[in-house]
Image (cartoon, rainbow, N blue to C red):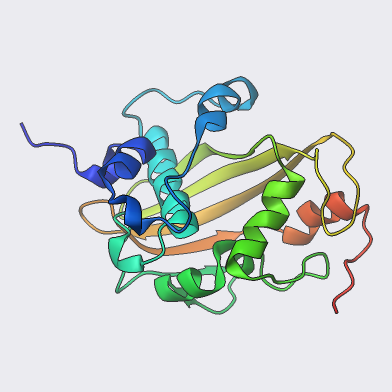
Length: 212
C-alpha cells in the first residue's frame, strides 16, 4: 500500500515534519481552528472526499505561505512553476508571496486596505480577528487536474482594523478559485475570484482607509 504523500496528510502533519528553523516566528499554532471552527463552519465533508482533500491542501498552502520563510520548503506546490492571481490580474510567483506576503498579494488594489510589511499585514488581520479567521470549501465543481471550487472565509470582527473599531459581528466573504494541480495533487497555478472591497468595506463601515 502506497503511503499518503506528506502534503496530503494535513496541515498538522506538515508542521510536525518541518524543521523548526523553517518557520518565521516559531511553530504556528492552529488550536483555534480545531476548537472554534467546527462549530462555525457551514459544510461537513466526508473524510477522503474531494472537498475534504481540496480543503486540506489549501490549509497546508495557507500555513506555508504565512509561516515558512523559504518557498523551497513549501510542499503544497511545485514551487518553481507556481503562480497565482486575483480577478484576472497580474501573476505572482511563490517568491513574490514570500517577499510581499499573501494578504498583500491576494487583497490586491483596494481603497479599504493599505499594503503593509510581511509581518504587518498579518498583524492587521490577526488584530481584527483575534478569535480566528477561518476558511472552508463549500463545493467542488470540477475534479483534478483543474479543480474549481467555491469557498467561504469568515471571522468575528472583535479587534481594531486600521483604526476602525470592532462591532463583534461575523464578517464573511465568498469566492471561487480555479487550481491547476499535477498528478501528485501539488499546486501549479491558482486563480481567485472574489470582491475584496465587499469584505473590507464591512470592516470600515464603507469608509475608505486613508493611504499615507
